[in-house]
Amino acid sequence: MAVRHVSRLVVISLATLSKSETVTVAAIEDRVPLLAEAREVIAEFHAMIQRKSQVDLGTWLEWTRATLVESFANGITNDKAAVSAAITTGWSNGQTEGQITKLKLVKRQMYGRGKLDLLQARLIGAD
Image (cartoon, rainbow, N blue to C red; front, top):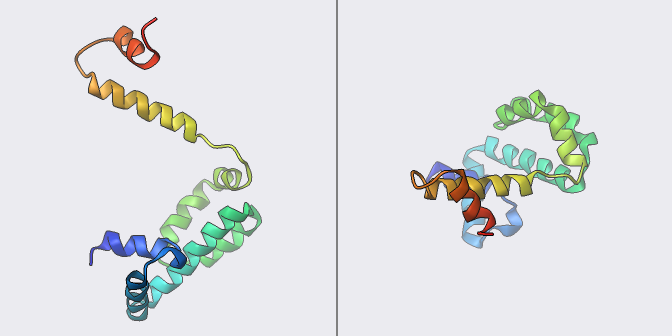
């Protein structure tokens, strides 16, 4: 089984797994107990985000020490203010990122065929 597939099985909720995937996860976690702990840590992080409770963030960061997700937690520690804001506020830059992705896609499709005026006409529409 590919590492990418196992990683996906560890980070998604057990409730969304099929019966065969659940059996696979149970077999893997029996052989590698650290993965079972990592699943718990990740599930708690997901729950914290869904509850919008950044109060638990410090406790969660302490819990992650000496687990398989320690490097992920170190990244969160380095940018704790931004993560706290992301958990507690309803603001997101998803719309902005989507528009930038669309712009870059169109620009790549037009590579070498035009300048700013053609790009503007393609994105905004001809006036």
